Image (cartoon, rainbow, N blue to C red):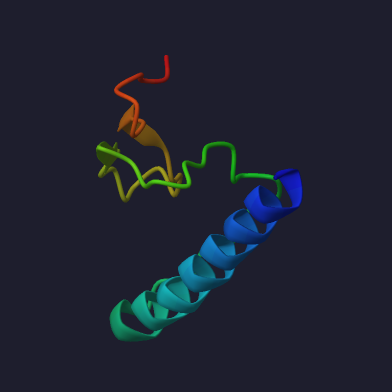
Amino acid sequence: MANKIENKEEQNYQKFMNELEKLSKKYGIGLQGCGCFRYWDEEGFQKISYAKDSSSGDLMIEELVFSDGTSFE
């Protein structure tokens, strides 16, 4: 079972990176970060919003609700 989960997480990660590349090309914004993928949910998030402060240069999650209804603090 764990191997199946790891494969699903890897597949989701690769799909996410492909979409991020498309968004970066479209809007001319490139992101760089190390160890910044802290939250994942195989079923997808119920809700996620990011801080929209372009002056900071940071990519920060403001609100995150997992598929099971729990949220992060």
